[in-house]
Every structure is written in C-alpha cells, then in structure tokens.
Amino acid sequence: MENINWYPGHMKKTKELIKENLKMVDAVIEVIDARIPFSSRNPIIDGLVRNKPRIIVLNKSDLADERAGKQWEEKFKADGNSVLSMNCMSGSGTKELFNLLETMAAEKNESRIMQKPFRLMIVGVPNVGKSSLINRMTGRKSAQTGDRPGVTKGKQWLKLKNNMQLLDTPGILWPKFEDPKAGVNLAFCGSIKDEIMDIPTLGMELIGMLSARYANLLAERYKLEELAETPLENMENMAMKRGCILPGKRIDYERIARLVLDEFRGGKIGRITLEMPEDGPEEKH
Figure 1 (cartoon, rainbow, N blue to C red):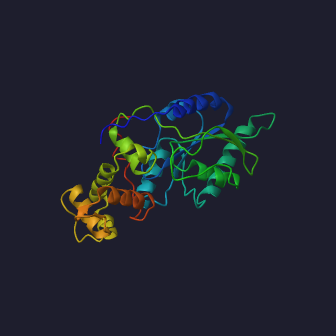
Figure 2: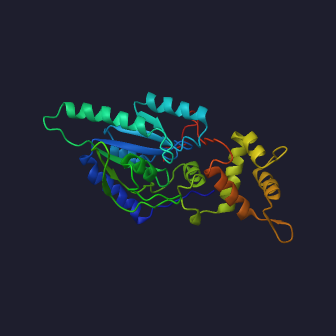
Figure 3: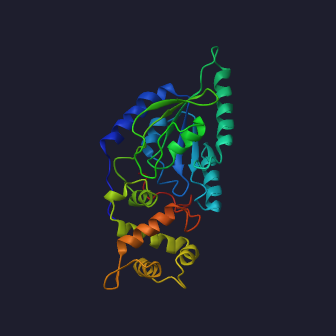
C-alpha cells in the first residue's frame, strides 16, 4: 500500500497539549498495542516525554501471541522501562499497575517536605485502549470508549481511587509514516480510520502477513485444507468458504476483507503478534 499521510488538526493540538502539561506530571503511562509494539509507539511522544519516568502498558495482550508478549516485556525492561502486559477491557493487570504507581509515588514524595498528589499523564496513538485503562483506574466510566479511533476529544484531569491525579489526552499519530509498514500495521489494528483506507487491499495484505506468520491459525479459522501461493488466491478461497459472493459468482472482495479485519481485531483468528523484537523498524518513523 502507498505511504499513509494522515495528520488532522486535532493531532497537532494534542502534541501542543502534551508539551504544555508535561511539566505538571510526575510520570507518564504510555499505552501501546501488544500486537504491534513498534508501530504503535509514537516517536513524537518519545521526544516530548524525554526523561520523565515512564510505564509502558502492553494493552490487548490477550489478543497477542503469548510467547511474543514475553519477549517484548524483556526487551522493554532491558531498555530501562517499567512495563506491564494488560487487558484493559477486562481489567487484567490493573492491580499490578497500581502497585507500581504507588511505589513510584512513595519514592517521589520521600524527598518532598510537603506531600503532593502523584500526577500522571496517559498517552498513546488512537484506539490502543487508553480510555478503557482510564475507566479501570478511576473505577467508573470517566472516559468515552469506542472501537473507532478518535473518540477522546480533549484534555481532562481525573482523580484516581488512591488520590493520584491522571491527565487524559486524545490519541496522537505522527505527521508521516517513514516506514510504510507502521501505517499499514496501525490500519490492520484499527488505529487509522477504515474510511480513508482501501479496504480490499488492506485485507489482502493482512491475509498475506497471516499466511507467512500464522498459517495454521488462518487455515483452521477459514477451513482451508492448504494455503495457496498468493494472498489473493487465499483471499478468494476464504471468500468462497464464507459465502462472500456477488451475483454472477463474483468474489466480494470488500466483504471478505472487512470480515478478516474484524475477526483479526476481535481475536477470533487466534492470538497474533505482527511484530517481533528482532524485526526492528525498517526506518524510525
């Protein structure tokens, strides 16, 4: 697919908002998608946060390959980060996150004469699950959630149950994807609006990636006796199996593409990670 260049005005405002408010927080929680840890890490955020203490939350870890998840945890820890694998929808990992935050707060307040509320900022690209995490941390539905990117619109301070304070920010992408794979991976996972994508091509690319990395899961889910040589042939065979057929026995490429994307995003094909630590980004976005 061609290089994706998508930078709406609210993304620019979010960058400025983060920059303005960063001096007010003690630590940053960066939420990334456990299925695409390279592609869902925003280098703009990296540059803004700099030396602030940071916790990396590998969200949607229940949808990711378990073996790959352990390797990602080891990599981020080796790089000097605090890291947690979580499922923010179910709340798995929330207790461990609070334990980590309380340790950080105790260390911060140890050097203060006046005890101050520990303040946090939560950041991440659209649709990685920030709002679900915030709702878990506050114990109520404080933030809007949705399976479409761009639900959170503006800044809000939220009080946590342990009297910590959390600054929520809208999701932020970067101006241009220097590595085309980053944009495509984000599109696979729903972090870029489907409305601006060529869905049949995106679906075919995902089928190609799954054929290479998770052939058994793909064949089992779509009842294929064996995989064909090309993603297009696999796509057509899958469409036949699922009845994605137009009048005149023509393949409905749009329908099968949307079906595969939805089933991948919902974890119905299996636990899948599209990037491994050893892959590395071709170019840093």
